[in-house]
Length: 324
Image (cartoon, rainbow, N blue to C red):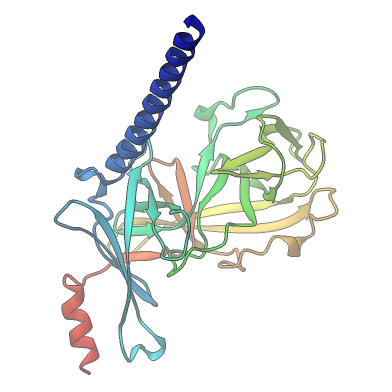
């Protein structure tokens, strides 16, 4: 009799634990969505109409404060503006950042929402940029007060080079990284791998006599990227060169910058030849527009993916344009 009572008690306890866990999980998911769509000024930088040569992208909130993204294509020769798609989209702001956001786009045929890191600043919208990360030099933290240029340090690529598409893009097969020091740079890649993530370090013994230490593996969601193809610690496949930054003035009198990279050599690895590293958007690394963003914790080069549009009513603009 006592055994039966104990079994019943045991079942009730297990049932209560399961119910509590499910409720807790539900609350976490609900809070997660509320954070993404919380009606505050965090989305003000993104709301509105943006455009480039091939499309308009409009971010709006509906009457329920839900965030939506709409894409209107400008087809070849721009005969007709094609209002193709609208997506429910979550958003959030990166902690301790003024300009970094992430979009969580619900594509129709995708099983999961796709997370897209973006950087939005000064009416410019970047979907591909580089974020500063910590590292050590000769086993010590670098002295940032001795920086000779705003790019000094270790940077890892964020976002999507292909921009915001009509469909869920494939996961990137590689992620670029840069070390800038003095007038020299080192470039290498993290490659998509099937390793279990850990916090082991990799090292580069650079031509300037310094030894740089940084993460061997990167974790992006459920994916893991590695910069070393074996159990070793020393990075072998990398590109070396010099760089310089040139300051100028734009038409409005504001200071702007350009970046030039001069590849001069490579590491001892078998995959470190120059043509391993072509950037699909910027094959010629000379006088590229350089943008220093988010209090110099982010940089981007080349053209922004989108600019803030002067169009204030996208429906009216489509109607007006398509009547021509």
